[in-house]
Image (cartoon, rainbow, N blue to C red):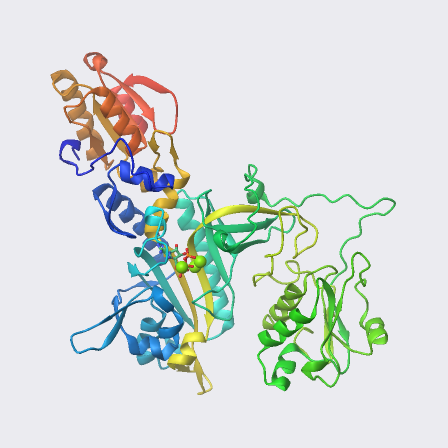
Length: 585
Ligand code: ATP
Ligand code: MG
Ligand code: MG
Ligand code: MG
């Protein structure tokens, strides 16, 4: 590509309202232009980057066995009414009417459409598992579109939907997607952390992870524990009254997840954590049984317990007659906590069999989370009446799966999960999210299949999103300097920028043309700055565009020499044109 004919109108200054570095630089590099608030045109350079991001996403999705399709953006309101989200989605849903006054929405996401599609074609377990995905423009009338492509009202998303016969299958699919996401972000050159998150408007029963690109401009706050490696999204930074001071991640700290060595208390040797054990506690009930007896959902019971408990608790105690009103909570007062008491002792002290025991000092909502997670995972004892577990260590005995209540926590607090490490906070950009939806949509929209025994069951679903246009901005947030963008090779709009200093100099131009042909013929994507501009303008623009390798052809062209420079390195080297080409190919 010759720069003289490239449509990339660069700017010396960015509009002052552009707060994020990525927004400023993408505008200045002539990559994006705003058409309306939160609505952008991707100019040719941005489109080249987006196509590469899409291709990486596509390859990794295909690698998991997912199949690409394309669903409509224009969606009938009836589908949204069926799922119950037509009202619930609120003003973010773009609504419109056709000429017959029928209501439609412009798709912000596609659970409804895909579930209805599969419902009509799904009969037997033999058709499962199956995962479908698309890469498509989405519409959300965001309250505050901002930061350029980071929060648009029209944006590009990859969304995938999985269909499985049971929770085990969904678990496998989810894990494969999680791994695919790690590969996608690594290939795009983005440093992400997978964190546990709230399910939000999408909902679902089975847990969710978000993939957060670390960046100061990020709107979310992530808490991480130095000891157990647990990481959670505390949601929008905006919504948090007391956002802790930003802390720089130390080199490799999050990566390695090295447990901090805890000094044993004076005179005491550090004891290894006791193993989990199953205890016979006749008369005790599961949370689910309690929920059933009370005609309430387990979550509502949990809410009641949380409201009852002040601070930290060591045990949820449940009376044998399993009336919900009889749930008792023993809260910890200061340091004088109940040790992980054996159930007999607790029963003697309180007259109640023990419902569930968790680690000392754990906050109650987490304790309940663990109990429920353990039951969902079918850990022996956790879901059985008359039996219970004690000394269960989350993370050791079962995966941490649900967001805990970190909202009261401050930097340096003990981790509410393991009670050993201390919490740190970072800012992040949510570039992707994966959900185990379970039967949330299939039950509502009646997407069922016949199992091998001939019974009809709702299909288990998962959904998996990546904000492709947001990802472009996240790459730019993580890869730039004062002078401009610094594209990672895999997603760069071009690989090599060939810059003849003077296009009127025949020797320079001949050398540039020759190098351009050699590289292009070997599959390297080359942009040649054949514009009649002052060298200063050309170099400034080259830094701004951020193409990974720059080859300047100047006065030494007659001796066959060129200047080779990588955009992310300060030094350049004078080498022969052949060597420059060899270094690249
Ligand atoms: P956010 O919390 O930032 O509003 P979300 O949780 O509402 O995002 P999801 O419903 O999880 O978004 O959508 C999947 C992905 O789509 C997100 O992880 C994000 O990368 C991207 N995305 C969501 N909203 C936008 C937006 N307004 N502009 C650009 N990308 C977006
Ligand atoms: Mg949102
Ligand atoms: Mg979110
Ligand atoms: Mg999300």
